[in-house]
Amino acid sequence: MLRTGCAMGLVALLSACSAGAGGGSGGPSGSIGSPSAPTLTGRELVDGAGHACIVAGPVPPTVNWSQLVNPILSYPTAGVKDEALIWAGGRWHMLFSYLTADASLPGGVSWGIATATSPDLLHWSAASPWPRQAGVLGVASPDVVRDPSGGYLVTYQSDPGESAPPGAQDRLYYRTSRDLSTWSAPHPLAQSLVPSSRDRMIDGALVFTGHQVLLGFKYSSPSQPYVFEMARSTTGSPQGPWQLVGRPDITVNGDTIENYEFLTLAGRWRLVATSNTLDQPWLFTLAGDPGTAAGWLHWSGGYQLDIPSEAFNTGAGISSVGFEHANSAFVCDATSLPRHFYYVVYAGSTELTQFGGWGQARIGVARSTDLVHWSVPPG
Image (cartoon, rainbow, N blue to C red; front, side, top):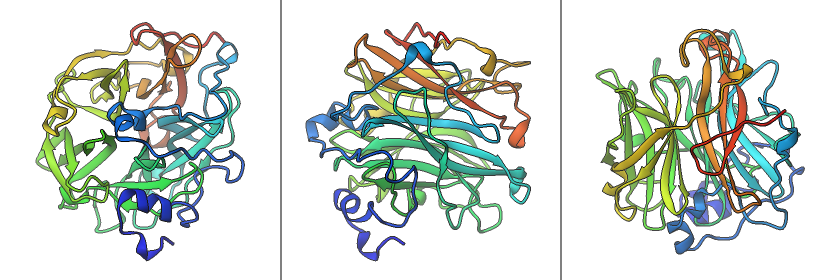
């Protein structure tokens, strides 16, 4: 279990507590080399390096595009969604929600997080689920970033909630790693912002700006429909304390957004998110000052990413009701590579009946040179 001396600053916490912390393996331990990265400078954090999907190393990223066929990642007895993607240590690492059938659990579904690795987005390892977490009914919706120490930090939620008291709703957690394989024990994340057990917080995503540490999340309560909220750590650490900043000025289809990813693209801070209505991928540009907490409440230029439809992400009815078209999109800036592409991975399904109505989702990929025109693999 996590050693008791780990209540310290973030850099020290990652150095002392990640490796061998007994939190369990999130990947095929010993098979992926060592994707640890050097400490990030303040300038790099300001430029968004902590949110880059490609960690520099001796082995450059590979995408075997001409041989890819969507979906690029799927399993015959599981649904996979809410994916995050990062290149480190000579491998692509995908983290995702991993849904399997279990009649003993609420809704007959086991919610977990798993990882898989690939050298080229074509050949994938078997899914490696995280161990069951005590005190929660399941876990889901991972997002991965690098922190100032160069380590990796994954935020996620308990899903479909906490084990106690009865009816307790979802809470946010995070785990840290030096190698994307061995993980720390779970740490609660900003749970003081939702003191009632009936309040719900999901889809947590951290922002390391070099000036501050922020958190975006989706909140609801018995009296408050879903809203997108931002908070800041008063200490600059995920350990908090946390202070609510407010609700960003984003509305899509008269509703809110979910499944957040903060990153920089073409020198600007951006937000990739899914519309709460219709489950479509959207991209927004920060209009406020990134150096202030309040600046992160102001966004502009939002538009839907036009992801092509294929057999695996098309079904009867409308998206989010009868099937999933491009849910939980995650954008990867690979423009430093030859041909200068952006990639987006997303979840699609042909139905929403399996796994308690969530469907047997599978993960696809598309690419673009301008973030507007997207193409899918030719296979």
